Image 1 (spheres, rainbow over the protein chains, first blue to last red):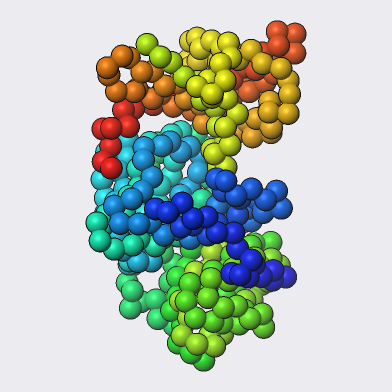
Image 2 (image 1 turned 120 degrees about the vertical axis):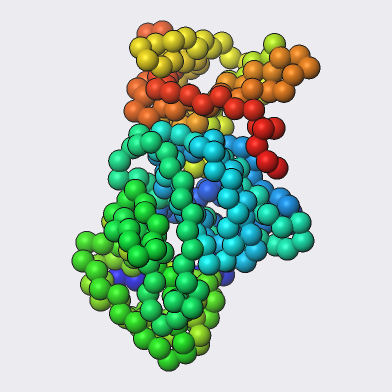
Length: 232
Length: 108
């Protein structure tokens, strides 16, 4: 079953310094029918003005993934990390029993665009952790490249949930197949371009929630940059 | 010294209690290896909503000494318990650990 959440129907928040397009209820946007999907609680497509960001605030018992699409983000936390990441890099913060952090657009000139993803952890109360890592931008081409996974290895960042986040840039006419157990869920986010997901058309910024699909066939209509998440 | 109790939902940011906006009697005292918050309040819609999100609460105490920066302390609730004591007319929140922090010490 594939349920499409069209980009045109997404909520938009404009706070001047922050433009956000949350897929699920977040902050001032509350829709009881949209409180998450599987282990995912939050998926925000955020644009931050130069130099702006989120001041010191806590998190706990949440696996928080930040994927920079444009610009640079500076992260600082109570664990002693102070890290700037840009496109081609990913951050995973396992908040566990608690962490204080800030996130700011590291540039004073250019906008920052990032995907902020929150997932329920498989175990609550673990020691907090933060990791950042790079993936090969060229390595995205015509493959499902795992960038975050509980099956960490080969450059993927670990996460405290039984899941994998893939990124891919698929050439027009290209096709990929994702195999998964029928009881798993997949979340598909088209960042750029357009594709068909087992016959369902999706354009830029469209989201699909996928269930009971053991073989998901992804066919690019135009060159397409997308994120696929396989999770419980 | 000015002190504020703030209780919010961690995901939505919904504020359940903010004593800057509405003063309510409350106490924070050491309990077991953590702290017990006792908040005198009616069991109303606000409390019911808080109880629904009992595993996703952010509880803070802000302390603002005169002419000094605010010290924020965030409390980790984990499994609580978070319960309403009908006899006492109090919301009871048990916290396991805390992190004190000065916001200005983080980069902006």
